[in-house]
Length: 72
Image (tube, rainbow, N blue to C red; front, side, top):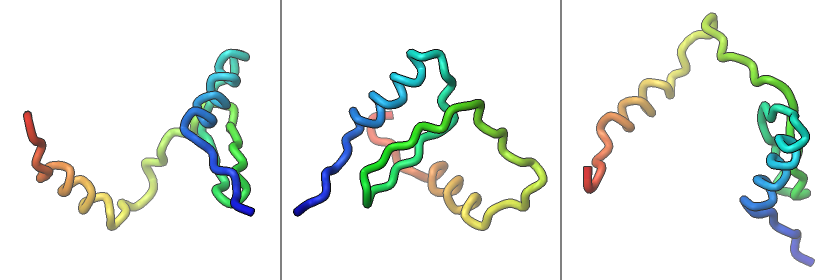
């Protein structure tokens, strides 16, 4: 028996239902094993400015700056 897969439409439907009810969506958690979609309600936390920089921050920023963008 294969597990049911969720679609982007399933996630959008869950978020839209919360927003229609007047609830702010902070984030969405998805369990790919059980196909469980959890909508976390509330205002998202602001990123902490006290944290040390991540070693990957420079790599991803450099990659984005050096990316070739066709048609631009």
